[in-house]
Image (cartoon, rainbow, N blue to C red; front, side):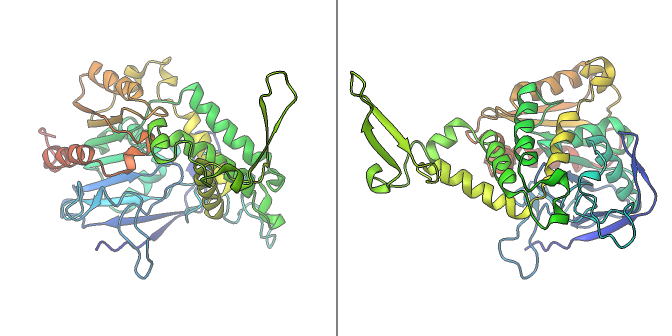
Length: 401
């Protein structure tokens, strides 16, 4: 069994941010798996998505059900084999899993006030995260990555690595991602943020001082997000229109009466507190669980970073020009039923890379699971990643890579 051990690295030097602000005296929490080889050429950086963390693989000693979020992908004998590769997971700035973020004490607050950053935490972007990750790799003595990989928002970071630090990345694995968010995706994020901001317990982001948590807003935000991660087919297969009670009247959820119209149609009066459909129960469970561990300000920060990511913006919207400086080899993977980060968006990345005569492999997996497919153990998907790491990433640095 792969044992995971979180570590913390402190940085005193200020990190300049894309917003023009900077942050100093910050911590990054990270984990490593496997061994760095003698020439330090086998390092693989795994970038996390919205609600994940540095805990990529393995389990914690004495903690049941503590497997990392990509444990099916990374470990001894797995597609990203830690018997061969030195894998690094880093918790991004602004997160709520140990790295400096809104929950941490604000060094700019009056001494002894105990004030946390809260709403005053600076805006962070994908590019800022990549710069912070590069600093941590510098400290570890890793000049070049064998590969950087990630799914969803993690895939955006992997893509950004290839343009921000083209000489430091030999391969990039971009899974279920996109070169930017569509207007629909930004809209979903905004509705989720509004749910949090409108919660009376939010207090302008400074709810810590009030001793409360905007759980209602967090629950709704998670429910909205979770709907977008699943495909219609999966929701119908798992839940359909099934009620929690086999007999509607026995559930006591609905009262039925005629409404007095000429055709005698029924008037359904729902008791709003009851959970009637199984899909409702599932979404509420996911929302309740999320609200217990995730920070509201972190949610706002990270969804904004998602919205802002657009490497082509500085090139007049030309993605080919944005990726012209990339030198890595690429594996791009998408899933047919992922409507939040659809295959069409992955093909945009592939076309821009091919237009630049970059070395790129593309796989479009016919999977029913929607966006969540990148976290699941589909044999075809796992096989493609394994093959790429075995045949391409494992090659020593040099012209052949």
